[in-house]
Amino acid sequence: MMEWIISILLMTGSLFMLVAAIGVVKLPDVYMRMHAITKAASLGAILMLAAVFLRYPQWVVGIEALMVVMFVIFTSPIGAHMIARVSHRMKVPIGDGYVMDELQDEADRQSAERAGGKSGETTEGQSGKKDGGKGGEKIDTGKL
Amino acid sequence: MKPIGFFVRIFRLVLFIFYYLKELVLSSLFVAYDILTPKDLMRPGIVAVPVDLKSETAIIALVNLISMTPGSLTVDMSPDKKKIYVHAMYLYDKEKFIHKIKTELENRIRLIFD
Image (cartoon, rainbow over all chains, first blue to last red):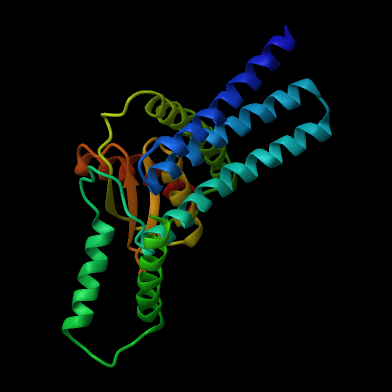
């Protein structure tokens, strides 16, 4: 009986990981790939760790599995967030069919303001953004 | 704001963890379904969602939770911490999307962390 539960957990866990990997290949752009990686892959890891705990029901294993689960849960959204943020700043091309992109609108508005008005007011963030944009274009052409 | 008891907070935190796991399972199923079927359903977009949480812990918890709910992923945050930019996979109705984040997620976070 227990063997069955363990096998089912392992199978579903690895199935979710497989789905996440397929998603990374198949989905159209960076953000959607991040969707696949954060969600499906972390659920897969959790299921597999649950299977490990059921197979070796000891305190040590349980606590370790729990800690790994917590690290996965709390860090994978942050990692996805950082990758998405950096790729937006680097202007990685987005897929088709976007309804709206308010972050891009905001960035455009700011750069228009900067070009229109006050010269001489340079802060770190602005110069950093400009550099990021230039670097991003280079990387895009290289990647495509 | 009135200080709430320690145990109330812990109780809410435990409830919150269960809610988080539920969202994780739901969103994994969503994403898996979407990957495995030919995709005509997607209407991606990036939306600005206003937040009015004050403490940084609360904002981090909100950002994590948004990334774990089905079809949404935090991309960036405005420098004054007033807005977060959320990438949505199924953006059929912008107002409804923002409303869901504000009511379901932000209120839940506010009860615990803020």
